Amino acid sequence: MAAVQVTKIDDPYSGYKVTQRIGVDSQSVSYIIDAMQNVVEPKGRLAPEKTALFRIYLYLPGTFFVTPTVISECSLIPDTKRRELHDSFFTVFFAEVIVENQNTVDHRAMELTRLHRGENDCRILAEAEHGNLDTLLTYDTEMISHLADVSLTTRLARPTEVWATLGVPKGAKPDKVPHSTNPLGREAWWKW
Image (cartoon, rainbow, N blue to C red):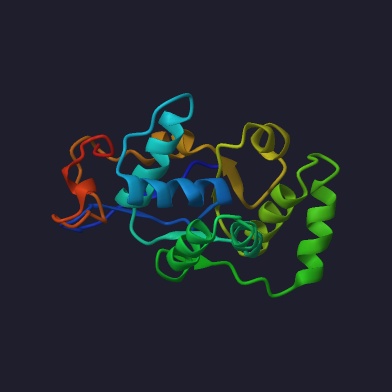
């Protein structure tokens, strides 16, 4: 798959415009919400992926897309407050992929299950393809190892892979900057 295409534009804010539609899986959605709520720098083995994911969100114009299956998975979060928090973020921070032909998505998801046993993962990729998403971000290692090279239209990639291809210069101003009263605005871990 081709790398994410970045076009230099005369924009006093970020200076870069991504010409692709980027989607996220439910694990990525949860992390973005956690980062906005908890402000804490990511730790552990997934810290580079989480940092790159949040940077992509902040530095690129527009927003991330979610598929119906991502929304459905998040609706099953057992903790009511956390589930409602996800619902509130879906209405403001994410764009939804609209599935116009469910039969096409069902057929493609079934094809993908021959390569990967995660039925919802397969459905998310099928919906991303149907919704013409250029990239689907995940840090699900199994999903990537089984499905990364099967789509002709949607690149399945880790956030670190995508961030590395963007060419955002060090010190660039993010497209979305936390308000001065937001504790995240005083943090430096997400800044490039």
